[in-house]
Image (cartoon, rainbow, N blue to C red; front, side, top):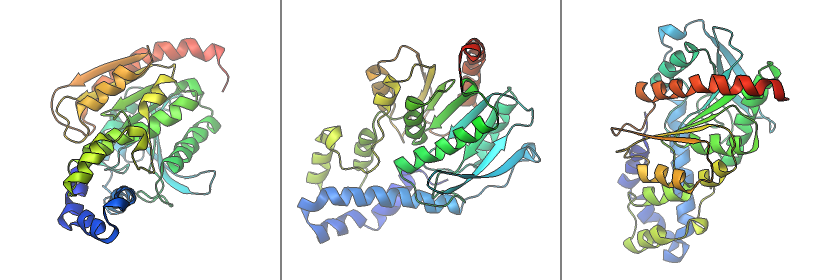
Length: 309
């Protein structure tokens, strides 16, 4: 697995940022930040294309392999996992450092379908075997195609929930803000993309003066292409939300999850901090998700009679 720190360290070893500054000068540093963002996403996309994990025995014969077409004609590699023919589904928006065959994710799929929910998971455009190149706008078209697939399959929107992890919390929150869903679960989320970028900037080899300016720059001015804003999104969601974060997460600091929770105008949020530093999806997180889903069952059964897809 290529972690965020791995990606930063690889770029630091080549002194990439310093070389760019020498080419462009200090005054062009903001453009260089955007280049770094592009390289950062591209590095993870390239890694995901070469990191396919074999299926675990528990998933043999249980996956419907799909090619989902988006509205802009991108083809997404996706899995529909529903061996028990459930009429309830979870769409999973994974983090930046993995693709859908990741062994930890495979274990999560099994636990979820064993507890009565189907699973739909896809690789974002530019990731895994999906075509195209990743972007925030593109990712919204990607999850929209997954959502529409389930609707066409006859799944009621009140029975479609979303789980987002890490960077995928931005994709999940963006979509949930504007579409009817059963619930939203955010695992190790950030508050704003700019907050996450500032955290990464502390680890990037760059001139001290630029690092100081970027750290103190207002978030709305931070030079990013993909400006995820989980605070704004969650403030406009009226369905149950669960936020889980590890207290010692070294990839996305827990302070960003706390900021998200404290600044969101939403009374439907359950917030829980877990011990440890594990950023990835693990058994403990999935168990907490499944506990949450037991309550969702009661919630959605009341909604189903008064809703229209």
